[in-house]
Image (tube, rainbow over all chains, first blue to last red):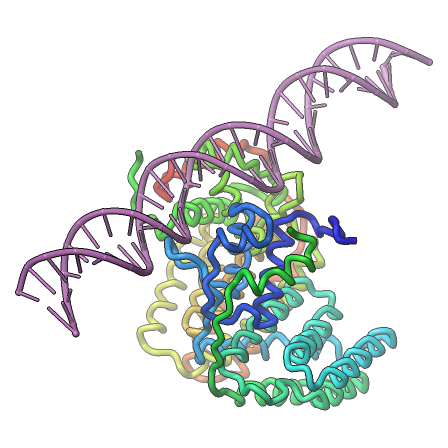
Length: 233
Length: 233
DNA sequence: ATCCCTCGAATTGCATACAAATATTGTCTG
DNA sequence: CAGACAATATTTGTATGCAATTCGAGGGAT
């Protein structure tokens, strides 16, 4: 099924997804240059499409688009990070309030399954981060509030950048048990306690700010895997 | 070549701003088709730049980008509208909490001045809507929280679309006095009352949902003014 | 050795060309 | 006259080419 697979509506979107995944997996770490040529060459598309993808990524805040100087993976400052988590809190609070006491059994199962997956992947650093984020986006998804979903997605994505830059290398970013506790409160409909739990949860992420890590692999090397995943080149 | 004026960092941005203003002023009403070449022709740029601008607008939720079928000004459903105001409430609550009791005299003056401008423009329908929105973005601005600012801006912008579609034609969308009351509470540091006021304020906007208005002017006609404002064409 | 200038290579900004897809018009048939 | 179909005209999707800008290396001059 290597051919078109599900293309999701255009190759530019595919490029966007490929780059986004690469960034979120920290295969392209903050500050990495993103030259249109190399990316296009590696992904088998023209600069035009890469450009479009970069514009989208910059609107999402994952990429910084310096005029005439090229795009780089965004490098949020520590303060931007703090503010971002403040905003995240405001939105996830709405998520929790919307969902508390209203979860269907089917949704509860989905969340439980996800939490078990998180526990299973506890040792794998990369997957662990991704799954932790996905728990939050999964919750947001269940509100069926389109703008809320979109913003939580964006903020969770950018949180990865923050953690990549300032997070402790080995601490599991989200304690899995906190996710379980939150789910329990949501099911029980204890809204206030759930909100408090969410606040502490995000606070505890925020207060783990530390040293940056830097490795400089070549873009082309790193992108080949993601190209395949999107059915490109 | 016409004056470059203040280009703000690239002609694609200029196109983006021109279209955005046209949409927010309801000169391009929801559902209007946005063909790349007519716009480019009218604005004196190539399709490439128009396309880039449309991608940005679609990321902001102002434009709907149907693959192979062209872009149209977004036409949010009534339910999307309600959800949007829910999200807005969550974020503007954070704005209020952040600002309450912390406004500098200079900022208070700026807000007061703005409110007076709103009163002055009460009769002019178009300007009135724009100013009402700008009050909220002005508040957000003062938090110095980049992501918060961006999202409030986006949501306020999209609120214009909602009101264009479902709002009563003649009701002043935001009662100016409510803005003044809110400011008073913020200055006095009465956070809870300010939050409550903001909630009522947004609620009262939400509960004014009614009939759509449609006028179908040609894109080219309508864009000429905006072209000049951005130093295009 | 350090600074500065100049020139060339690399990269972005933008327009244009062409292919693919969709909408439209006109015509024919029942 | 309605509906189907074919030919055509628009409009979008993508690649490529050229001008403009930035980056980096080399080569004096101090």
